[in-house]
Length: 239
Image 1 (cartoon, helix red, strand yellow):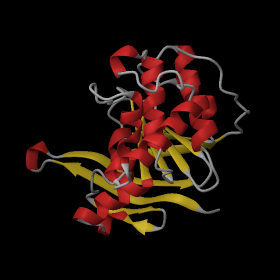
Image 2 (tube, helix red, strand yellow):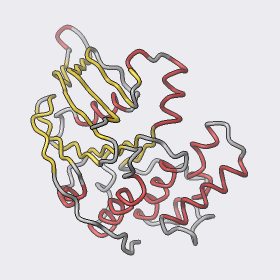
Image 3 (cartoon, helix red, strand yellow):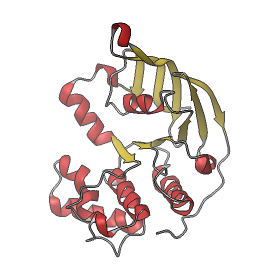
Image 4 (cartoon, one colour):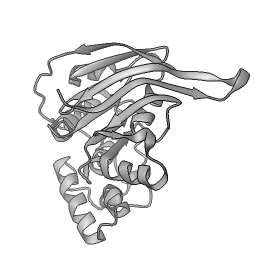
């Protein structure tokens, strides 16, 4: 089996001396291509820290992290930023949309950062927004959208540059059950592909059945990994 992400004995410390906190205590995790993996566990167990290390936002204190075959621990400065910009898409709990930009402009941001022409970036953004069911909201500001619609803009933004890794931090936590399920249905439909891997941190047990694997974390370690068969989901309506 080919793995998009491999973590071996990953340790992360914050602070020093008496203020030292050991957030990760030797994490081992493998995420295969073509799968959606859920990271679950109690608050403070290290889920978001591990997610940030996989995404190249934080550096581990020790251990090996290979993403798409690249040892990202050895990447520095602009090389790490470029790797992240090309290969990673982010979806957050609070959407993180820029309030003064339209849905199309928000969704186009990763392509603009990568230096694509604005006309092409906006065209691709409109195409992806249409796929997530927002063809009538292309010129709407975030304040004119519901929470579920804003999260769909965030999905479009994460997907617009066709990254091989999708990183999601509590993507359904701010949504009601219907919209949370719609978001996970869209993730499975759009993001779970043979050449891509999706990692989702969640406390939301309503969406556990969307994961190909559930990695249970406890006290800074991956305690167990459960594999499960995912039933076919078809995107439904949402607000």
